[in-house]
Length: 349
Ligand code: SF4
Image 1 (cartoon, rainbow, N blue to C red):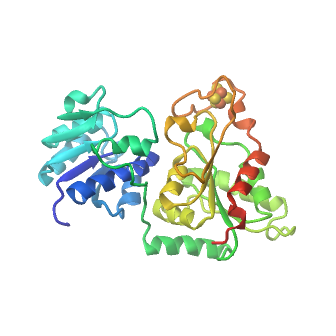
Image 2 (image 1 turned 135 degrees about the vertical axis):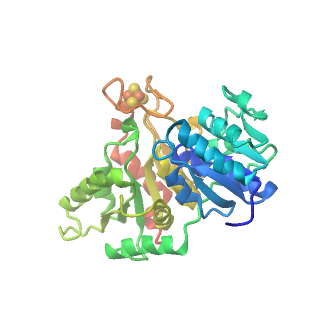
Image 3 (image 1 turned 90 degrees about the vertical axis):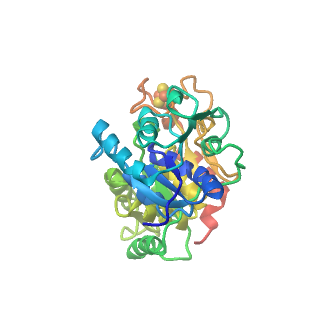
């Protein structure tokens, strides 16, 4: 095991939240040295190569470590590490209790319901991007650290191999599409048509996890039905990478693309962390919640003037009004125009 760390971060929220915590990890490492982080098994593999991280400690809170027994078991292990301080960006009882049970003497979290379990609570800003709001936990840190991920050379090679196996080399524009979301109402319904039209001008790769495989296959079939490779018509490749790569390899694949088209979901933050431009499609949520694209050259699209929008913090599983106008009225033409404007269809990677 590497030399001991004194600082622990506990962040077991959604994957995108963990990516947006990486500026905080950087700020804390600058101040205290490399940090350890307790996070979900999926996020642990994604950020174990981050330069601020000494080691990741996987906490399978919905699986093997479920319930109080799992929490106490993990706390016992943390106690042996004798951390001096814990930072807890996720406002949750479980995270606050874990730091307490691990007997970490200095426990710093955001003010809220569980503040009484901390030794120090800080106000979480209500404005600004979530990555900057989380950075406020490292009191006084400059908001100059961007989200960042570091796939390894073998991750990059795995992504390159997948593309090469599908006949996609360097030198042509490559657009990544992330069509999935765990929140049904946040899925834009026209990715099939978008991929078909994009494939007239660029290679297209579909990124996502195992849950997105069927949707990815459907998009590939739709594109090929319109005259894809083997179907004639001069189209380029459309390849389904959903479920075929690890998260870090997927990040590497996103890093290779000229642009990512995505819903308001984790791939948006992966793209930000990999420096890849984004066109993000917002339905029941809005960028003003603090989870939108970060850079000036990124684009957010959404239907303005809908009285029901936004309708929830995360996006409901399905439209509560049944019409899903926030997504259905956002046309393929509008998304294509935004992509065109970024210049990505002329960029060769
Ligand atoms: S209620 Fe409105 S904002 Fe919410 S999912 Fe339906 S159309 Fe979208």
